[in-house]
Image (cartoon, rainbow, N blue to C red; front, side, top):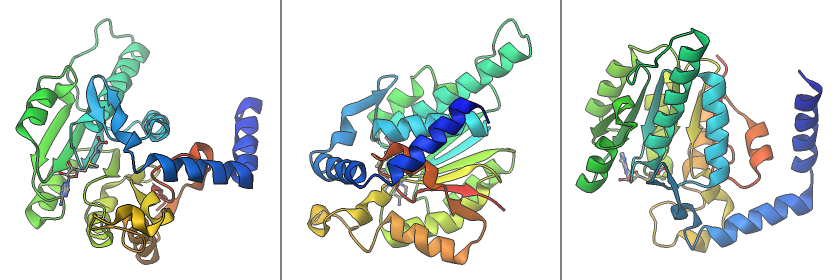
Length: 256
Ligand SMILES: C[S@@+](CC[C@H](N)C(=O)[O-])C[C@H]1O[C@@H](n2cnc3c(N)ncnc32)[C@H](O)[C@@H]1O
């Protein structure tokens, strides 16, 4: 590890123990979630419903893991699919440069597989017309329906390094079912990222009109899943680094 990397580690560790900083970050999450701050951003012109900090964390993970398949539940406007596809395109470009190829192929084996229960026609059309579309496959249906799970497993069988992102229905039971269905696709050393675990840390009244809330959300599902499964651990360095994140305890690294 370089001196610079060691400094970064030490700084993250110190920041994670800074109560004032943690409290300030928590307050920013509490104040920014209700006005839908996460709906303000786009990736390559497609709306992406994420906090910028989590997008940067995903960039770091994808570059480190170098997946050939990214499985994502929850497509919405397609921004996260386009983001993942653009990262795969950069991996392809770096492979091409490293191998001395003069021209990079516009298609490759690398793929993002997105699953959503309701892919709106205008979103589907915009995703299919996007320059990143050649690396994207979409499946419409519930992510926990047995036939959809089987289809995803069949596709994933053709890939070696897989990263999984869960960002669909945020109830405990749904996310737990998704974890039981898809976490096992994650390659050892890769990640299964569970978004919106932050719900557990917010005031109960914040989610009054939603089927999820404090005590019933992605974080409670992660905790339950980890009790049943020793192959994953929470990578706390990511949430300690980000401070502002919708996925505290949601960055799960596969260790076995
Ligand atoms: C938060 S949005 C996804 C945001 C997207 N990942 C992004 O970063 O821009 C949640 C999506 O989950 C989808 N969804 C809800 N229930 C689902 C289910 N049972 N199976 C699959 N997708 C579902 C919704 O239709 C919605 O498009």
